[in-house]
Length: 91
Picture 1 (spheres, rainbow, N blue to C red):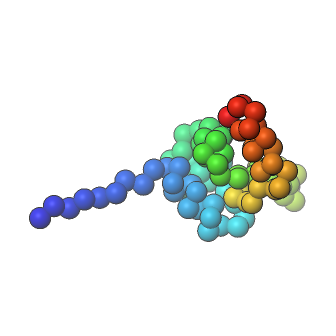
Picture 2: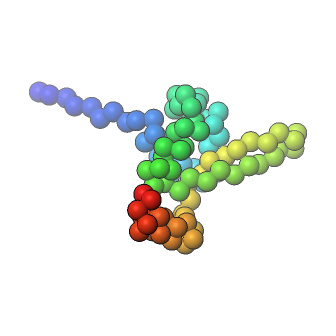
Picture 3: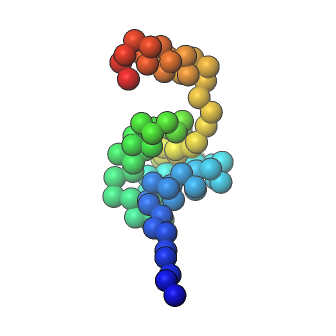
């Protein structure tokens, strides 16, 4: 009997969390929950793979500003720019 296990990458776990949590994730949450060493680099990699990840800043009552990353739908202008870049051979 052979048992196989599937390894889930940190990127896949971050995407899964972003898909289920509409509030988004902070860099600190990515580090603590998923062991992501460099959340900014992870977000950049995911964006390069085609995920529309947006960074939203919120300020709490104490004046502390935090960046929350959330998964969204790209605007028509972003999609058009991507097609234009591809047609020009930039991508």
